[in-house]
Length: 141
Image: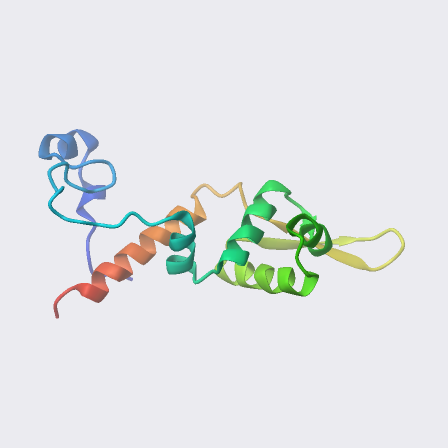
């Protein structure tokens, strides 16, 4: 747990506007600081340690909820073993879950999902946790 307090969440939006702070916690007059805006892929790489193919697989699961590895492999035009590795990494991060579907002819397949029923966006929550850890990492001791 972080020892740093995020003051922007403790202050109302009216108070932040009064102080010149936007909803993302940056000051309106901070143009003197040069900060590179990350790409979506850079955020997934930095926060979740995912590569480009993992992000493409995540996007495919979002688009085709309940898809199997084989279906995702066809959609992404990638080998099933590579898609399976990406799915494993996505499950380890908690971005994707899987369910087992029994087949009429016997056996089963795994289907992959992004949990859209969560009350909190898992990506936003993970980015907030990463931000807190990053601030702790650069704080003077």
